[in-house]
Length: 317
Image (cartoon, rainbow, N blue to C red; front, top):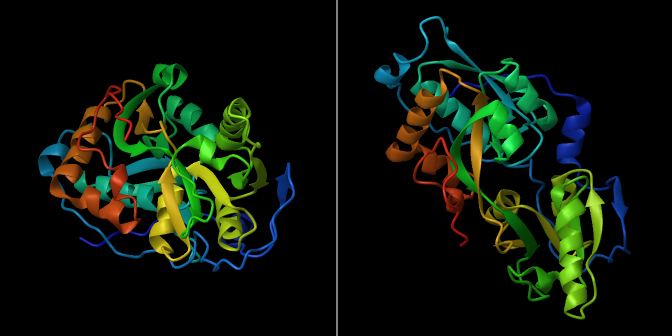
């Protein structure tokens, strides 16, 4: 069965943010280093992998869908974050969450209808039953669990990207970043929480603090690292892993210590689809297509062996 391509609207502004390779709108709390001569790298949305990964329908699972469900699964995804979910130059949704969506709908004999929904609108949209499911790396918290059914489907982590030759001897430990100039995503958890926490540790150990530049997109931040304008980048671990897998001569990725977590699919609370989705996703894991998706995007170490409707213990690797 061939993969289906789902067209969604795309604005010029979004495409520009994903593909911008030169200048960027950014804020900084420290001076930006001059380029060091490090090799440049392709942007996160350039030269993306195009391997098609397919599965077959499980008729028994398809028969468990509600009788009046129809043949379309409406999926909320925030298409703004390579490599998980973004839009390619042709205007099509791509990324590992899009691949998972296609496999899940194929397994259930459905057609996917991907809705490009900003992250802040996904949970209320699911709660209002505007969407059947979100495939968007949702983390658990009490507020979300009160409104949603959640299904664990992969691991998550914080990540560090550094030059491949690691001239500053950066490790997974946060204090190895002290005194460095770091790139982050503007408005991210790393900007508001992680960097202040790192600087508290740096101060406690008598080390110089981190300085940083906040970029409008991860694409801009990774390109800044590749050209030597920052000395490291911190953010979602899958972004660092993907950048390093695509450009091993330019980047190395590390997992920020003690940040492993489990990411979840989200469905409306009490959805009739929750258990059948969990079973279908488990079959994708068991048959190997799930692993193929992660390998395609260079993030195979983010695999889980089992889905779960409840939070399971996280092992810090």
